[in-house]
Image (cartoon, rainbow, N blue to C red; front, side, top):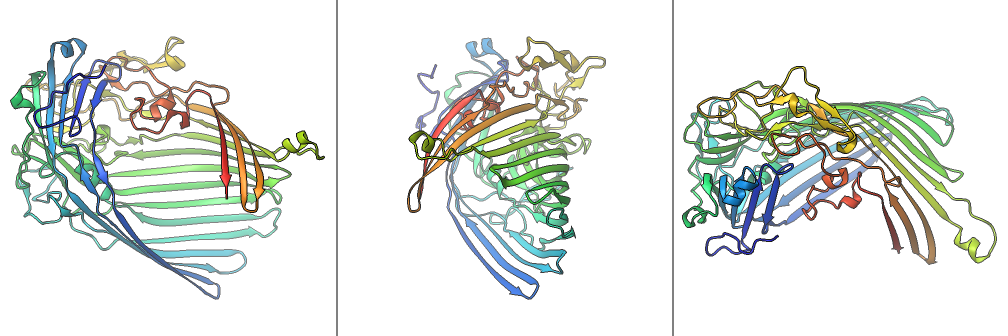
Length: 590
């Protein structure tokens, strides 16, 4: 039930404060959230222009894109967090930890510029070649009002002994201007017979990414001079007046609690390539096979440190650097039929594998944090979103229309039916040990348990949702330092080691369009999602040491919607893996 009174200090109210209570022993962790989160006013200006020029067999294009954003970030003024091991400790108020935080309201400035030139050259009737060059600049974040992100000197992620704060006004990192991205593609018609046309296509390109997203993540972390967190350990709850007081924000000249970029940060980029062969099967049908690849370089990744031995002045630090990379390769098969005799369809299959050091750059996903000082490949594994097999099929059929002018024949005329089926294999599940969150070296991240030899990883029984669960006896805590109680190394369970459940779902719809007047049409649609009401389960709980470990406790649709009803995610009704649902709709087109 809702709290009667929130334990806020004066003058904090329910509109200016946020309260969070966490109980670790509850299934998948239990958390109560009360109060507003960040309030952001986004302001953006885009200037885009392009020029096309046809010169003989060459089609030239030139373009420029300038974007300026100056968002007003207004995080909640005060935040209070309390953590309990289990329900009895919550009942007695014996907290294992918590924090209180404060924040300021800066107006940031982000700018990026892109320009390109491209030529499509029709060499002859068989060969088309497209080539071009793009130039990207992502200017270092600035500020129009309030404090900017701090800049640092003496940065060395392996040893922070010489880390210091740069003078106020120094940009968080230097803007780089040498980000040139060449791209080339070609299409060659091996056979010119329209009924048996064969086309070979290929391409390669370099694509730069922006740094603005990670700047936004850092802004919400409440580090000086943008905010401050005062951490509390093994303390009674409710907090005393002194403990719950709004903590003052230290000036930007301190490194005790810091978030920063590598001052020599470079833009991340991806190398992408593809090769495909397409074969016509008559005039209306075609089949194609494609090899697609992408290699991410200098990807952004966050390192989270707590009291690192290399610099005792640092209490907590987050550092964003180019420490991650990725690799994706896929075989894609496709059959498509254009609309003919009322029938069109598309069937595709993808066999792929994505590998990376971290599938997210921010500290919000601890399993993807960088771990300097240890094995540089400790987190190298299948990506969080890796799905090896995906099969989809979609068919549209125009139902036969009866001739005649009777009312029922008019009502039965002009209907179409759509069917869509998706089948995919399971996504990875990363096993984490809830008993630990920090290495003995001070590096923060998801710490995985050790594997127990000769124990099955999975348990199979009809008593488990989906018929499968992870075996808790297959894991154990990694070795710890007797003095600190923190693990001396990462567990032997690899990142994203296990797999949850695959998923499949059939959706269908019927629709008809009525002409009302010139340019006015009314479309009626009846749609059914998950026609067979097939149960699809979310990945099993990955928190070793917590209640419910290894068992799925919700549907896939609810999981994709953000687990908690009303938590702000996309409604589970519109996600794959929800129970059968029916939707009727009228759309006016004019």
